[in-house]
Structure formats: C-alpha cells, structure tokens
Length: 178
View: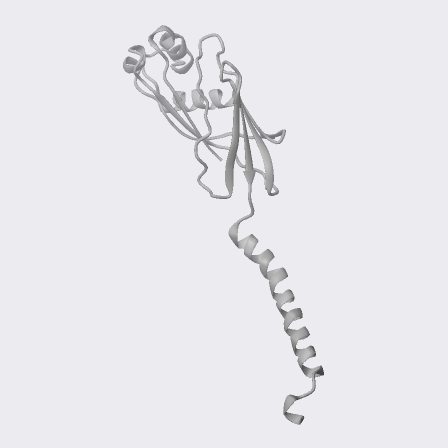
C-alpha cells in the first residue's frame, strides 16, 4: 500500500515545526534532517488491517526551504509504503491513526480510488478531527484465480457430461440396424 502525506505548516506554526526539522538551527534543512523528520512523523502514524498492525517505511520525502515554510506556503511531501499481509477475499477494514501534534494540526484523510479492480471501497469513517480513518473495502479474487476456479470445476464437469452422453449413446440401439 502506498501512503502519500502532504504537510503544509501555516504561518502560525511554521517556526515550531521548523524547530523539529532544522535540528542544528542553521536556517537550512539538510537531506538527513528531512529524512529524520519524515521518519519521526511516520512513527506517529498507526496502520492496521483487520486489527493486524502494519509497518510503515519511508520511500522518500521532499521538504521546501525554510523561507518558503516561514511564509506558510511550503508543502512537505512524504511518500511511504506499508507492506500488506496476504488477505482472503471478502470484507476488510483498514485503520489509519495520526497521533502527530494534536495541539497544532488540522488534518484531512482520504482513501483514493484503488489502483486495482480487485478492491472496492465500501465506506470511509472518520472521527471529527480526522485523526482516525477506517476504510471498509471488499477484496475480490484475482481474475486468473477466478479462471483457475472455473477450470477446476468446468473441465471435470465437461468430462462428466461428455462421458454421460457417450455412455447413453452407446446404450441406445443403432437406428440403422432396424
């Protein structure tokens, strides 16, 4: 599963957020500082599927300059992945919980349209602060799995029908003999 976080600290909180990112207070954000902040932020997110916790791993991040952030215009972009366990077909629940800075944050959380036709989102439930999002979804078998199921029933079934027709035909008297 892919996770994309876009964070825009407004003017009112930019300095506070920058103190957490620019650890050496030199007025510049290094790649190491951006990575450390992104990993810290991801550690404040809890994900689970059907109650089974998922790990979240940073892929990359992009942090704007300090000047842009102080104007309230800069958006940090964090991309992460969470490996999903193998799941059976049927109804499942994905829960996303954000515990980062409840004192200064305003959040909006959404599940986007699934990239696979195997997944159908059936509902999204949020708490009032949008810190907690539960996505209900249905997982269907992969098309090749469905074809394999059909073949496992269809071919033996066709053989039984063919054998039955052959047997009936062999038991009937030959009309040419009469």
